[in-house]
Amino acid sequence: MYLDISYLKPKSQQFLNKHSKFYIKSGTEGMIVRNIYEKVDYEEYEMKSIDNFKSIIQLQLPNSWKTSDYLKMLISADFSLQGALQNLQIHLGWLNLYQNMEPNINQLKCGDFYIFGMDKQSRPVIIIKHLENENFQTFQYLLETIKRQVLIPYFVENWTIIYDCQNQEYNFYEIDFNFEYIKELMINFCGNLNNLLIVNSKLNFQQILNFIPNKTQIHSKIKLITNLDDLQQYILKEQLEEKYNGECQNVITFWPPKVPQVSEYLKHVTYDCYEDYQYGLRKLQDFKGRNLRKFSSLGRLSNQHSKTTSMKKSIESATSSSHLKILVHEENGNQLIQEEIEVSNNQGESEFENQKKNDLNFYKTESVGPSQMEPNNQRQFQTILENEHEIEQKCCSEKFNCMIF
Image 1 (cartoon, rainbow, N blue to C red):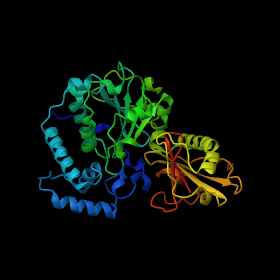
Image 2: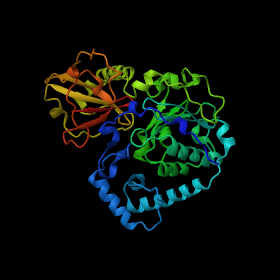
Image 3: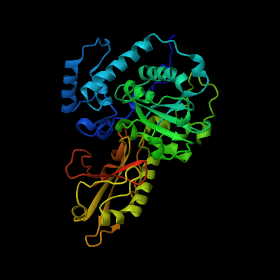
Image 4: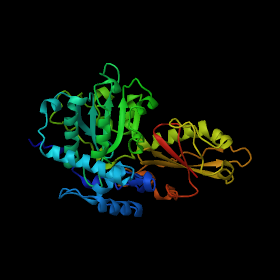
């Protein structure tokens, strides 16, 4: 049986983002995290690894196999050639199973998992309410179908998942589910997850991580949402159900997927819309107030995800100049805002700059981040990665990364 969900694909590609370099790829060599694989250049390290990988493969590959598929197998194995070879065998087994598999329509109709809406970068949103061993293959079948029929090379290569723990008797990790299956998902759909937004959970962030494979590729994408309104930082209200404080009626017919109405707002503004810009400013001001004194005196920032953080440059060197530049990113690489803080050399205390007052022109932009500001208010942005003078830390907020220069 062929499932046709191609009607969920965004129709107007002219409104889709041109991605920032940081979003496309971050990290270096064996620690690369990549969100975009198609229609982009690869690093020299990636190309050499692909050539080495090709030289040891003795398996018959599908006719549709692409260079990006080699790279996904490598990244899923942290660039271990033997690990990538094992992952390739697993992935080819899944592709063969998919071609011969009959989807369980009853499992798609019951609402344990379903597709509804899109996020602010036109990525499909998948809601999971109950995942177990019995329905795992149907879930994986759904993901493969989305991958083939809904995603658009370069423009939309990922999806956003809302994992709702509300109706589970205990919590998401106490269900009849073999968590080794998560590793299989990370192989078969490497690079396809943008965010995993966990709502209504009884666990804290660290407890959740304890049940997830220790992979950089997925840990940075997990967000624990304790206030449902925070979902609107990723998904517009008009694309969310009422139970998630959205404007759409709660879905009661889960298959075939429903399509919420797409407004002009979503067509013209993708991730870095004006509300997110203002939200980023507020978060940044909060960050400054809470942490700059600690930063100046201790040489480190509070970090929810790590007890200790090493600095790439001493605090004396960082505060010797008259300004500190801070770039705030959403953890998946979406750049929100740059701010500059005045620092007095003797005490290391800050005087906040005046908040940027000029509005964003949302109807004339197609790129993300600070380029949406009026040209006469733009600052020159520094390279985020591979800069030997960079000091990289995370904000206290679990939503943002802060780059301090």
